[in-house]
Every structure is written in C-alpha cells, then in structure tokens.
Amino acid sequence: MNLVIDTNVFISALIKDGITQEIITNMKTNLLFPEFEFDEIKKHKGEVIEKSGLSEKEFDILLLRLLNYVRIIPGDISFKFKKQAEEIIGNIDKDDVIFIATALAFNARIWSDDRHFQKQKAIEVLTTKQILGVF
Image 1 (cartoon, rainbow, N blue to C red):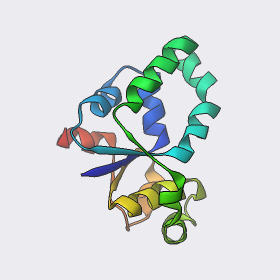
Image 2: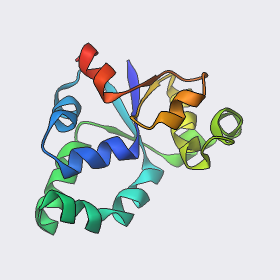
Image 3: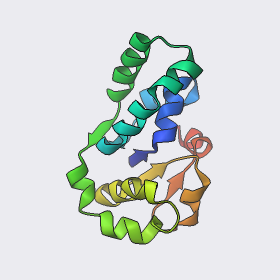
Image 4: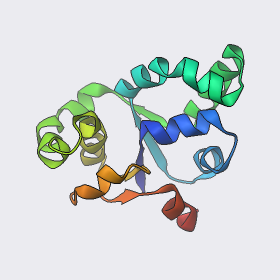
C-alpha cells in the first residue's frame, strides 16, 4: 500500500512523541511525502519547536529520523497530475492539490485528519484512527 502523508500529520509527529510517530516508524507500507511540503515544515518550525519543547538541534534530529521512514516525492512527478488533482480538490482546498496529485501518481491513499479531504471521493483518505485499525 502507498500512503501519502498530509503535512499536518507529519507535523504532529514532530510535536509529540506519540502514536503518529510510532505509526510512521513502524508501519510496513510505502509512506510518501511531497517534496514541496518541506516549505510548510520550515514555515512552522518555530511553532513546532515551541509546542514540542524540543531544541532546534533536537527538532532537526527528529526530522531527519522521521524522514528515514518516508519517500520524498519530487514535485515534477506530482506535477504531471496537477490538473486532474485541481479538478478533484481545487474547489475545496487549493493547498491540498499536491497531496491529491501525489496520490494519483502512485495510486495511493492519503493519511490525513483534515475533514475537507473527505469532501472529495476520487482518492481514499484514512484518518489516524483508521490507520490504527490497520496498524
């Protein structure tokens, strides 16, 4: 199974040493993360450090550790599916086009707890709770 990780899920794994981290580091599936979303992580780095209580060095170490369990998907691969993804979710949330495009490129599901993903029906979306049922 291929599973695209939403940025909010990945950020939650950076904030708290909990179930999301455990799933990422132990799940036997192809976890995919769009390269483009690193900008979002960088943008929220200060907030993540504040919420997690991690030092900047600890944050960087944890980020690198978690990245060992995911496959970074270059933008040019997902870009080929951008138009189709915009048709699916563009009217719901333009920021999520990259996740739909990546899912289309790899015939993948999406792991997200954001309810707006549920408004589209083209790509199966699993919540953390649902992933726990599989895990």
